[in-house]
Structure formats: structure tokens, C-alpha cells
Length: 111
Length: 114
Image 1: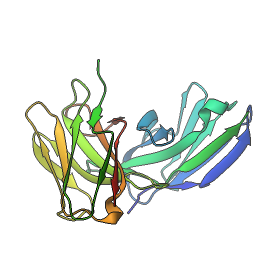
Image 2: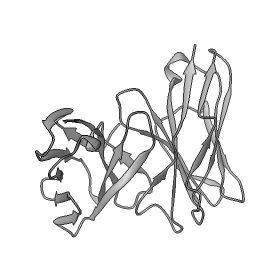
Image 3: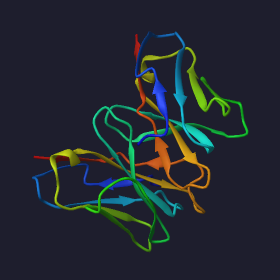
Image 4: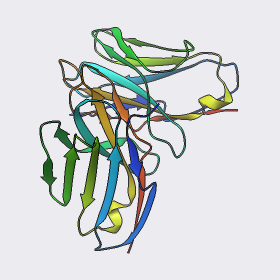
């Protein structure tokens, strides 16, 4: 079973617009991570936010974490066609070792 | 510095056969995790190896087994293949002392079972 569930499942936007993806999870976590996957390729780590952090930035990425609601969001600002990919949130349960991925949001950015 | 490498990249098997997939972790990493990703789905955790031992296992049958060698490379073996085993198999390595942070993924081995 998957710990994180992303919303929406798919998102189509124009280049230059912002893209927001949401993730909900079920249990206590050490941290939450976001990964990106180009079609059929390996996943690439984007950003990690620890359970005691509320917001984190990296370039055009902004991640928020609300542990009381067990949710996180990933904002990509000023999107580009090259941002077209699947985005996954991932969590590690407190005291656990495995990283559990959600089903992903498929983002399509139209040029 | 080589990243995570996996082999083979593609392979086709028939039902009932056995397959072995291989992974070399990123230099300096001692922990290897394996994931199965069906088309359109997120990666599903199979198991994790640390210090040559299976440290944690996901919800996969015993047909899925693995091994980690002293050089930290790893193998995933799947016996008695089923059509439903067709998927992208991803290997990920992480830094020493456990899996509390970033995973580095290989490009995967795409298995097709006919």
C-alpha cells in the first residue's frame, strides 16, 4: 500500500504558469521528500523537508508541510516545458527504513 | 563519480522463468533498496539491504529475493515469473547509517513477461 497520495493525478498548464501538487500521508514521518520522474526513467530527488520544518525553497520549488493535517504541497513557479514529468511525494515512517511513494501527479506543461 | 547503475536495461521473459537484476550503488553508499513500478503507478517498495542483510521488506511474495555483496552491489531475483511481474524495477542507493534522506535511483530495468 502507498503512504502518500498525490492530488491531482494529472495537471496540464501553460508555460509560465505555476503548478501546485498536493500530497497526503497517513502516519508519523521523519521527513517528506519530492521526486521527479521523466517518462520511464529513474527518479530524481528534488527536495526534502523535515518534520519540524514548515516550508522550504529550492530554486523555483517551494514545499510546505503541515504535520497536523498530514499533508504537503509542491509549488513549481514559472513552469517550463522541461518541467513536464511525473512528481511523487515520498515519506519514511518514524522509526522505519523504507521510503514509501505515492501514486504521483503527472504534470504536462504546454509550450 | 558513477551514479547508480542497473543491468540489464530491458529484458523479456516468459511465464515461469526466473530473472536476476543487478545494481551497483553510488560510490560511498552502503544501503540499497529495490522498487517495482507498474505503468502509471508509483514505485512499490520490495526490500532494502544494508550490511548484506535484508533490513526491511515490503508486501511482496517470497518469489522475490535479493542479495547484497561485500562491495554493496545488489541483486534482485524473481522466480516463477507471472504476467503481473511486468514492470520497471528500480534500484536506489543511499548514504551510510541508514535511509533517512535522499535516495539516488538508477534508470531501471524494464521487465516484460510474456
